[in-house]
Image 1 (cartoon, one colour):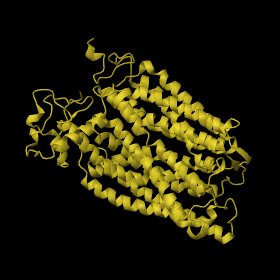
Image 2 (cartoon, rainbow, N blue to C red):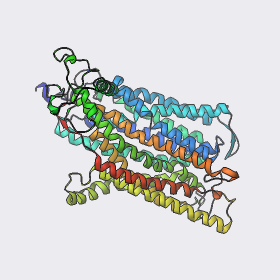
Image 3 (cartoon, rainbow, N blue to C red):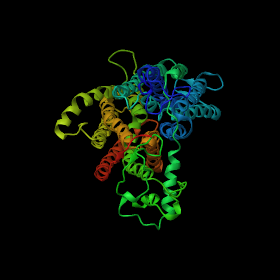
Length: 570
């Protein structure tokens, strides 16, 4: 049997650095360890974060506005740190060692958080279930633990799905088909982990203790690390291909240095390697596209570039390198429109939870009290419902109508999701209007809850789950397809930052509306006692911003130019 029949052709190696043997490494024999890692990590993350706003409010004695703002800032950071993890993976460590090292940081953060809720001297002194007096040092330990977790998750999020895809050889048709199946199971593992976290672990936090509520996710994260390391000998490894940021900077510097150079009308005269392969490891060559012509100056050959000798990449870049930067620039407007939806999405862990706390959380006449954060399971159930509906019903029907192989383009899919998200905010606002009407009619101002079932929140959770299937999955696919081959980790991280910025935007909006609405001694939109407040105004505000955002997205979609890949991977 020849070497071509045994070894993968995509440049992967085994854990010893030898060419990866297709029969002994990768494919489904390696993926269970990666999927198991992701399931446990998501179980840990959502089990710890779903109810965090209530931990801030009841254990760290923070106001509703402060607790919401701190939760949003932390959640935003969790989706900003992937930029760090992606850069480290692409430029230095590779995905395996990035996941391994950042997972260790993650476990350390989870352990410290559990200690802050259980160890005497670290946990706040409580006089009743919801009345505690933490010291500044105890609060500091909690936030140190949380931001260690944020750093740890930053090395996992942008790498783990791509690392799973690395286990399949694109040059092998059988393995290539299995790669699509891997993504389905991978996405399912995320939602199953979130489902268990949003139901069982939230109940444990509300009814048993915060120590166990944080301790179980810590154990789950430790299992995630063990699962990942258990597959070491079976994994295929991609060597890091160099810093994408360096290549971007080289194009910017070279084009600025040649700002007075004229770009030739015949774009075939621009500098590119003569080989069929790109000189960028892990990337196909990209064809020239119109637009951003100033950047084309970086690929204009001059007498000073010494074409026959060694080329200085800070003076002369290839067309592919220039097109990499153009592709990133074109992605940014589409990326920006995801921020508003992420602000809407973030309400599930913040104002939706606070709103649910003021409603009837009992099932019928039973004594079982539903944790308000557990309603997030309806978002997860919505995702689990809509994924097969989209794949098995919507795609075939729209394929017949549009003639497109996927039924809808990725941009059309995202636009539909943005449209649906508007109704999620409308639903939440109308529910709050009805709740406040009941408060006024029956004078429930000083009551902890009103006799309105918490299950009236289900529509707003279900609508966000539906929008999520269209937007987040469409966004992942869009960024993967339109990202330059050698920048896919970075672009994956970039797509995740919309969640971070959405959290920060929501936090900023909370700060602004609190500052304005509390003037002249008023209680404001988001007081500690929501019966005196108007969080419905906040939902309407997000709804209006979502409408404007959809309009901007439609304009950007008409303007967008798709990348053109040619040649083969180096």
